[in-house]
Each structure stands twice: as structure tokens, then as C-alpha cells.
Image 1 (cartoon, rainbow, N blue to C red):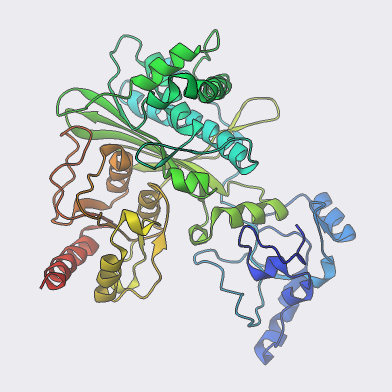
Image 2 (image 1 turned 90 degrees about the vertical axis):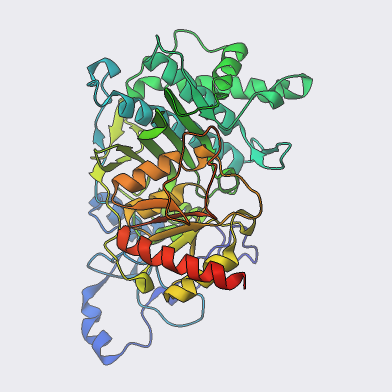
Length: 497
């Protein structure tokens, strides 16, 4: 990082661009601040949790953070007590003084050896959820690898006929999930309703992409033991990969078991090195029974979701966290609540490392004026002028939280936001894979999801959510939902007078 450079390719905040690190010292202290300044102590690289003292001493002596940014350790002042992350760091780009430098991101749980046991040891009652979680965990490792390649320009995104993006990760995750399902249910005819097909992988034009895809899938499946599934005895061939992807062509319906998959929800966010999700749910006779939602870039600390992931990644690079700080799988079973699991990591011994799972619950906020509402980033995906009008009517003063992908459902389930609204333009038809996993997770976390008329979403009518009344809304409970429904009705009628 060259702070003095005039280039700012990833939109770093000003305090990361300036070479004048004296700006990090508290200035213009009030009398009260002078009395409190003894609480501050200089540290070169401080986390909100205890760190290796030898590392701290080395950094303090050399004035070097990770060997990348030279900082005089004695010139950086931070509070001796942890800083709360219940809200995003203040905006320091307006030239005003400030007394706290944003601290390293860290969660509340440490990683420890926690292996996934074999699926044969899972009870029949929990089997479907265990399969969904493991499929998503393994898939997230593939997406992280591909996103790193995109960041280093080792791979590129491609455009489909509908002008949406597709990457090797989209096809790769669909192949991996399909393979896992077949291993878990060897005697069952797998019905999978998924987004991708193989049309662009066939013919001469698709040869190079297919070769890269097969390599990516096999690299991922070689790590299947991390999630308690034996890896394939031999690498999958191109034909086998294409067959696995093609299982996603089911039409779903109101009868039988249907797995609903969005391999990379929010591909635009994925390509832009931001939020995306791997979403898998199970429909049984038209009803959602299980859901797993992998969000590899989602920060564990509340409030940091407002910042682009590239800022989080850079912060973690120069101020390395020592505990679980980002990335998780939310999982839910009908009647069993919602839980958050860390993404599986590889330990030094090659074994699996995971943090202790924690239950998630929606926010307790009941006053709509105090709510945070989230919506899609792109204006083309939702009527943002109408949602802005709704927010104004409800008295919401906070800026909307605009997030790529089904991570918006994760924000509601975890309590990072209270309202999610999406009002698609024109005749756009919502696909079931864009909502299935998120809906059951929000509901099991205590939230409510309906269309704008208050009707539950119907996943039993095939690949699309047919019969939607205007839009989709998710909230943190019945009280908030009732306020939102009445406001939508009034605003909708007024906007059409």
C-alpha cells in the first residue's frame, strides 16, 4: 500500500490514503478528554482480544504492521478497552478530528479442532440439515478460491444471454452440491431446482471454460473429507461434471422432495469482490423444511456490513484478527431455530477447524422509526424510489443498507437490520432459488416473510414465485411487519392516484 499515491483503485477511506499518521492521534481534546487520555496507550497493532505478546513486542519495536506499513508505534493511540462495533465506524473523511482508530475485526469465538463426523453418524431427524450444511460449507471453499482468482485477474466473469454474469464458481458450486447430494442419498432420484445449465459449456466455445471448471470442481472435492464426506476415488471427468450440473433442471412442484439451489446468489457482488451467498434449501411437498445459507464475506461484527468487503479485507490484512471475524453458514430446520456456523478452515495438521456455533435471533427493535432497512444494491433490481418513500413514511432516518445477494436475509436473521424490501420492476418473475434458503432461516430466527399483501411465499408452483402481490418483505417480527404492510398499502394507493 502506498498511502501517498494519488490513485485510489478500491476506494479506501482517506485515513488509509494519507501518509500523515499523526492524524490518528486524538486532537482538539476537551477537558474531559484530557482527564481520560491516560486510558489511552500506544500500540502498533492492537486487537480487541488478547494477541501474542511476542508479535506485539516485535511490531512495537519495529514500528511495522505485518511488514507492509511502517508506522511509528508510539504515535498511534487507541483505547485500552475494546471499542464497540454495534454501529459502523464514524465517517472520518470530512476533515473533522477523531479520537479512535477503527480496531481490527474479530468475533467472539476462537477456532478449534471440530471435525465433521461421517454422515452415517447423523440422526435421521437431522440428516437433511447436516447434508445441506456440508454441501454449502464445501461450496464456500470453492467460491473463495475462484473469487481470489478473479481478484488476481487469473479468471474472468462471463455474460449469459440474459446479460447477467456467470463465473466458474456458479457452475462449480452446482456440480459440487449435486455430487454431495448424490453421495448422501445414493438410492434416491435427486430432484434439484437450480439456476445454471450447461448450454454455454458445450461446443467449441465452451471447451476452455469446461476444462477450468473440471479442474476447479476436482480441487474442491479433494477437500470433501473436511466436511465428513469421503472424496471421490478418482477425479470427475468433464462428462460427470456436466451430468452433475444438469441435475439442476428439475421443475420442482407441490409433491415430493426438491432441493432448491442458488450456487452463487449475487454474482455481481461476487465479481466485484463484495457480498454473495451460496443458498440451498429443501422443499418437501411444497413446504420449506431445511435451509443453509453460506456468506463467506459477511462480517461477524454488527455494523461492518455497511462497508465494502474490500475495506474489511484490507483492514484484516494490516490488522490481522485472531478470532472468527467473517464468513459463516446460517442453517435452519423447521421448528429447530436458526444457527450460525463459522466456515470450516484447515488446521496445521490438515484437520478441520471451526468456531463454536451460535444461535441467531432477529433484532428486538419494534419501533419502525428506529429500524434499519436493507434492499438490493442495483436500482434495476428493485424500485428504490418507492422503498425510500416507505422509509420516509415510517420515519426511518437511517440510510438504507444496500447489500448484494441473499445476505440481506442473513442481515435480518442476525439482527443487523429489521426490514428487507424488494419491489421488482414490471413483469419480472422472482425465482424460488433467490429466496428459499433465506426465508426459512429468517422465519426460524423469529422473523416474518410475506409478499406485500401479507401472503406467505408459495414455493410449490415450480421454478418461479407465482402470484406475488407487488413485492417481497421480510421483517424482524409481526409488530414491524404489520406497520410495514399498512404503510405499503397507503403508499401504494397514493402513488397511483
